[in-house]
Image (cartoon, rainbow, N blue to C red):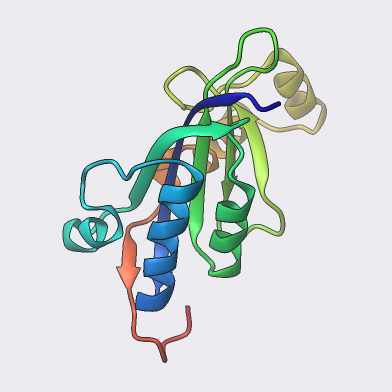
Length: 155
């Protein structure tokens, strides 16, 4: 049995036309309708990232996130809490990261830290600026615009 929760995925980076069409289809299938901004094509025109929203099982569109990593696309996926089961959270990744990461989120999908996170940061000698830098990587503002490139261009 699944737990379908409100999920928002924001994606950006350089992408070929063929991969862009696949991204649009995957996003709609995995998460839900595009945000009404024209989907991938609308993002190209607006020079912005693309986002999808809808209900997703456990807020975890694994195939969608795998596709993004395979195509070097930055993503930020936030999901709502399911009271009694799990809290709100974020999955995020960009091409400079070895592995995807997760963090807690508030109801609007912004990253938050728990007491244990602050204790861990303190034990590692991380400053407040370091904590803020860590959270900035988990924020949807870290997602670049979606940029269409030629098939021959390395993406």
